[in-house]
Length: 72
Image (cartoon, rainbow, N blue to C red; front, side, top):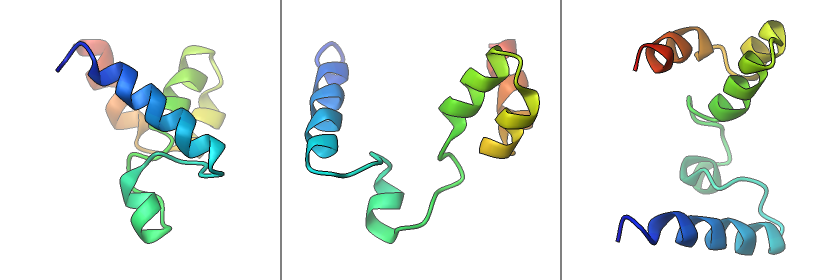
């Protein structure tokens, strides 16, 4: 199950994008509002590229999540 889960997620994402759904966040899909985790991956990418202000603007929780991820 663990080995096929990434492929199922990718397939589901492609299907949702094809249907016009922009996000795969379940909270966003159900409520229409962003959750506290929305944008954290994008913020992490911006942080790794050295775009600190853009990372913070994407998701302010990056200042908490990034040190934890780097520690792990």
